[in-house]
Length: 504
Image (cartoon, rainbow, N blue to C red; front, side, top):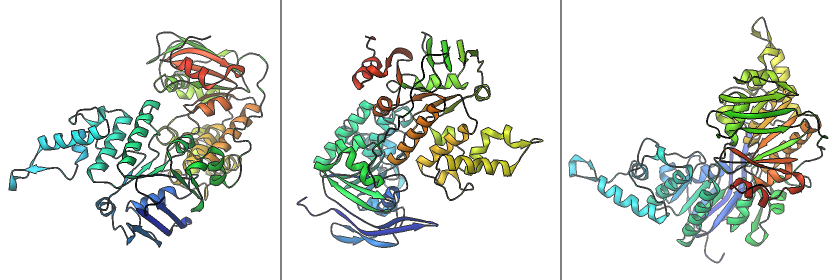
């Protein structure tokens, strides 16, 4: 970089009770570049970004903007200086229009002392910013009617109305389709060309390789290293993030069993919201079967039908050759079939409750006496499962919402594995977690398969599907488009079926 840094972070430190979140972290950010900041959950990325966005004050160190020391008193102060943070959970008023969101709190007015809202000007100005991002939607459209990708663009447009010079994006593609992701990348390139500096945070290393001009890696709240464009690759990123080479990132030591009676057999299943054509497939004990397909293909809906969340219209589900009537999740759990949902924060955990209570909740039938929960049994179970899954927590009394994403996912797994299931359905098992936690979950899946558990893994991560699956079932618009054995697995073969191609 020949230009002077737009932003300089010098020896920033920050701690919270019991945690040193940042320890003398430094970085530079230049105009018109994409700087990726990566690291495992708990590495300090979010804390650093919140300091830059005015949410937290640093305890030590210095931030320089245009070479001048500055200290942000609030989010509004950071915004005035041209720094905007787009959170992973978008902060839009869904009941308001696109234009109203763009200028919320800064609406143009007319009528002098009457202070009337100038809707015509607001609409006109909104169109300018939407066109700048290539977003083809009416400014009067209610935000609740937009796709996740369009909402992401509205957030960026709102930042641009504030004359943003530094745009921080936290996991911007976590809820986007591939097409929406490509569109976002095009917008990033356009903003770079206009001189906007972007900080890009993502667990998706393939995205980082593609879009970043430089990468700063954090580990345990400290600088772990920096990679220039020419050195950004998966191996280097992983090495700096976890402090070691992951020789066996995808743990796969189990051997699929020979043909036998399937552990899970689905016969001509039809369910509410599913395809007109019935779905049939089987998963054997000791086997990991991937379930692939594009967003909207119906993978989660199928999992919900198997778990009793979605009404089954016709067909049969069999476990170890015996019919299993599933009209409610209780029946699925009693039969030994459990589901780790795609959205752990909404459907997998009670975030405000402790690790102990979350692990104990689906196991109360084994932990109660005379309809009273035996607290010592619940505590013993939580301790045992946390040790078995290496959950990093100060204690089983810790609030689950305060754990990292990877450890939250382990708690979801812990509560179900305590029941020793026969069939485990994993819906996006590694979404939003860091590379080290991913490796641990892959190792756990491999161990469960060795122990004879039948695993049905739903994933949008093709690398995960190709490396962990013994077979892959591909859905297209709800129907089963085809099945790929291990010997025929490839990205091209999966995408051919996922986009409606006929089986070869």
